[in-house]
Length: 153
Image 1: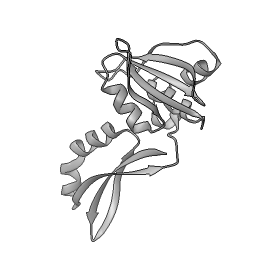
Image 2: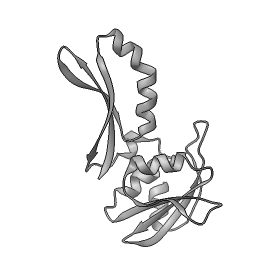
Image 3: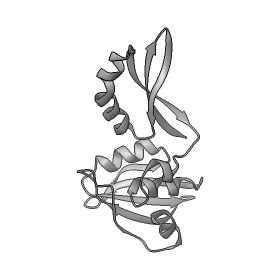
Image 4: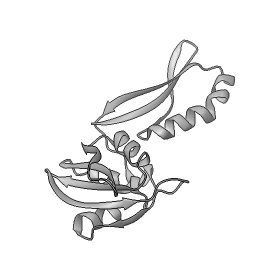
């Protein structure tokens, strides 16, 4: 299950979804950027909500092809894959054995030097170092094996 975040607003007695994303930070940015415009259109009670969904984000739509987000989305297409996120300089994981895309992205973006590790049925299958900050979402290095070559391609 993945967390899907939405912005809802009420207009004419109805609640409408105005924006949605698997990335919590995108929803927060969109709410800040569009709040005044939505209010000018007559929307009231603008709210961030979340719900659990079975879908995994499509990397072709959700993130550009060479970003760490696209690689994580591709990896999670495998139902038996989990992701752990840690800092290169630390021994412990900041996030352990998750399939929740929102939690994964949040952990990556909150870590200074993130290393993202992938596990298939509990067995380590590879990892990647990623660059974050200032709009950079690139993969700086990854294990070279069939699984990692697939998700990082």
